[in-house]
Structure formats: structure tokens, C-alpha cells
Image (cartoon, rainbow, N blue to C red; front, side, top):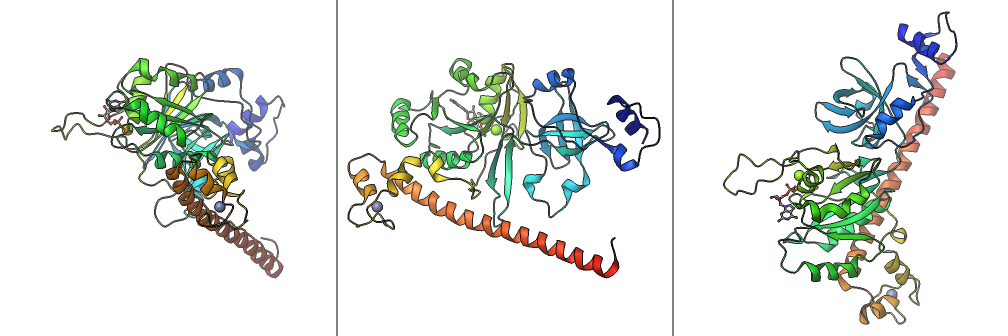
Length: 387
Ligand SMILES: Nc1nc2c(ncn2[C@@H]2O[C@H](COP(=O)(O)OP(=O)(O)O)[C@@H](O)[C@H]2O)c(=O)[nH]1
Ligand SMILES: [Mg+2]
Ligand SMILES: [Zn+2]
């Protein structure tokens, strides 16, 4: 525990006597101005530091997660790290594990070990795929989320709306990015049509992801200290956009040549990349399933207008079918709301209600387990004394 003693000395207390091991291992963390400048290069913002950091702990950002471990970046270099054992516990909520975009405290060594996750300023989550009702972090500490959709055959307004709802509870700013504007027949009219479903102030861009001039407006979200994450189906142009913003072909993109099967790499994991503009961009693999977490709020989302309308019907329990005084049917009839947007609202509303129920039940179970564990602990200590 030599290092621990030294660390105590650094805090200005001339501490020469032996310190109790548990106290020596932790300290209230502070960053030097050099450390802050170094971290600013990878999107650091002032973040509360732990009062119980391990001795020798250093702050870095998670830039990638592989099956074999994590890649961290400290603003100067990238290196591999392993999570501390408690992050690997099977019953740990996946959102409590280090995720791409997280700032963490690691202890150097062979290998460096991630000991703490610093409080996240934002986090983009989704419901985990499959039957499990857990949530998964897509990216942490992001300022904006670029929702990519191709203006080609992939074009899907309902999917954009689903993403926007998911982003609503993240704390980050959604930005709709329509790719392949160069190869779409009638990009302008598709853009105008979509505007009816994705009204301002939400920002929406139509771009050619391969052209630096065309993607330039997105740089407004990628200045020094900013972090953005790309979401959207596979093949929509996330890695192409990353490379164009980067100015080099670093991320593998789907091969254009059809008979070249060997060259067909695609993005296999999330990766945080530093851009020349000073911002950070997180490229992700395509997501097959975009499940709501249950925490989204329709009245705070891009559906707020519809939500309000549906509550202004004459009858509180209006089914918006044949009831008199139905504000929704009136708005549908005179074109104030888009019918497809209304249908998607209903679908997402039901899905959200189901997800929220599951989430609530899960929370209840969790707190019951905690109460039970506490009660059991109390009984044991009464029986056998404090342990
Ligand atoms: N013409 C055109 N092709 C694009 C555009 N964006 C992506 N592509 C092509 O679409 C394919 C898939 O792109 P990729 O970046 O790998 O998609 P990802 O799976 O979202 O990362 C590649 O062949 C790209 O060259 C665009 O804006 N215009
Ligand atoms: Mg990709
Ligand atoms: Zn109604």
C-alpha cells in the first residue's frame, strides 16, 4: 500500500504514520488543469468526481467495448482495460456497466482496471433485444443523436419517429439525417413530406454522406467538447458519414462492389472517434430492434401535439372511433394531423404503456429484494451477532 500513502501526502497532509488500509486505498479525487485539458480533447465536461476514488486512479473515456474488454482513451492515447470484478456480476443491471462514452476511473497496471463510472450527463438507452426486460446503454455522455435514414428504399418515417421517442428520455438532442440524397430520385419532396411528421424545431438534414461539403452543416454539433452518436439501420451510411467527417476511410463500410465478398466488413461494435473538428462521434452497428425502455414520455416528445389533441376530445375515455366531439378525428379530417403519424403514435403509445408496466414491476421486484435482503441480514445478526 505504498502508493496509497504517497497519494495521501499529495493532498497536502504530511502523513508519515501507517494509515489503515481501507482509508489508504481511497481518496477524494481532483483533476489537475493538465488532466482537464487532456480530457477536454475527448469530450470531457466538468463532472463530479468520486469522493472515494482508488489510489492512483486516473480518468479516461470508454471508446470501445469488445468481448475481451474495453478500449479507453485518456486524451493522449488509446489502451486496453478490464472492468473490475464487480462489473462482471451476472445480476448487475447492464446499465450499471461501463458503456461507450462513459468517463471512468481506472487504475493503471497490467491490465489497467476500470474501477468507477463517473456520473453520466446523458445516456441513450434502449430496451434489450429479445424477451428480457432489461435496458441497454447505446452511448453515454452524448450531446446529440444523429438519426440516420436513407432516402432510398430504406426510407421509413415510422422508424425515425420510434428513434425520436427513444431519444426523448436520453437528455441528448435528436437530429434527423437523411442520407443518399444524391441517389434518391426526388429528395426534396420526400424531405417536405417527412417534415409533416417531424415538425420543427427538430433539425432535419438531407445529405450525401460521401461528400464533405454536403455533411458540413453537421459540424455545428461536433465542435470541441461535443459528442454525437449515430443510430440507424445497417447500410444507411453511418460509417460512411463517420469517414467523411474524419477525412479518412477509418471505419469499414459495406463494399460497393457486388462480387467482392471478402471486402464486406461492416461495423461490429460501437466506437468513439475523435474528429478534426474537435468533437467526438460514436459509430454504431445497425440495430435490428429498437425497443422502448418504458421511460419515454409522449407529452414531452415530438408527439406532444397529438397527445394534447387526444386529451381534448369531449369524452375523457374517447376511443377516437365514432364518439361525438372527437378532436382527433376532426384534426385527421381537415389534415392537421398526418394519418400515418397518428397510426404510429397509437402503436408506440401502446408499446410504451406495456414497457412502462414491465419497468415498474421490475423496479418493485428490485426494491422488494432489497427489503428482503435487509430483513434477512437483520434476522441473521440477531441470531448470530454482528458479522
Ligand atoms: N450514394 C450514396 N451512397 C451512400 C451514402 N451513404 C452511404 N452510402 C453507401 O451505402 C453503403 C453502406 O454504407 P455504410 O456506411 O457501410 O452503412 P452503415 O452500415 O450505416 O455504417 C456503402 O456502400 C456506402 O458507400 C450516401 O449518402 N450516398
Ligand atoms: Mg457501419
Ligand atoms: Zn377522440
